[in-house]
Length: 140
Length: 211
Image (cartoon, rainbow over the protein chains, first blue to last red):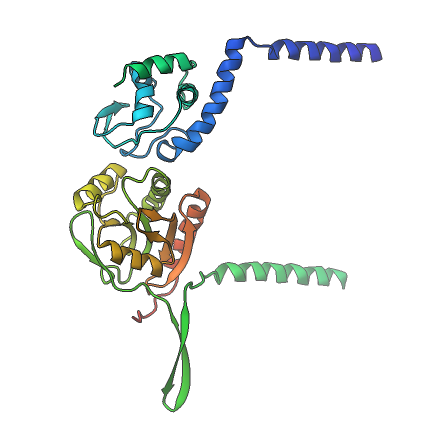
């Protein structure tokens, strides 16, 4: 009986070790997502809301996966330099408010994009800092 | 004997509960002074409460709004500016809940004072109100002289000053223009409490307005 129990404990431990064992990419994604949540709270949440719901017609929601996909290469630029006077269509609704530029570093932009693109109903995968640097190099 | 004792406790508890519920009133905040007069040869002392002083501003429709306009209204006031990226969106996201709850009430208003009148013209305020989804005259966005706005903030017991500095409080004013509550507008729980307090205030019997 005692032996069976210890065998069971061993087996459980083994299974949990295997399942928690992830490849580097998974770990990197999880790390970026967690850090991105904090960046979001500090820099984005006031305007875009706790659940990315936006605010009436003033602040666009972040729940439109189609918009995020279609404007993939511009997202880093929008975060870094803000938006002024540009009309954007999100969920088929027009938004033309000013978004202030952020002083986020490329790594933070990658983190917050990873968070936003995989929260609020979006499932668009992680964003790497290399991609952000590439996108930033062509946005001006 | 013992049963009787328990029964008594029960009755007392229940009556205490119902008492406190029916007598629930909001405190009157701010400075107060005693006003002693002689009426019919007797000395009578009245408490004079701090009230919101005169002001004159313009709303998002370009119409003039003064303290007189708000006579006989319960209202909530706050200070903001349309380009504020920090606490204002949070405040007004929460204020939307208040607007939705009372938008069809005739003697209730929300008054949002801009502290950046240079940028927040009547047209800018109208656009802001439209985009927020505000129609009608229950939520007014007021634009006026900076100094007058700062002075008014003091009587609401909130901070608003040069450099677009303001705090995030919602101030509840009764029909007699007395301050009856102050709530952190960025906290949804405090705003829920304010909605409950507005209902308490609405149930208060009308008094004569002494100005």
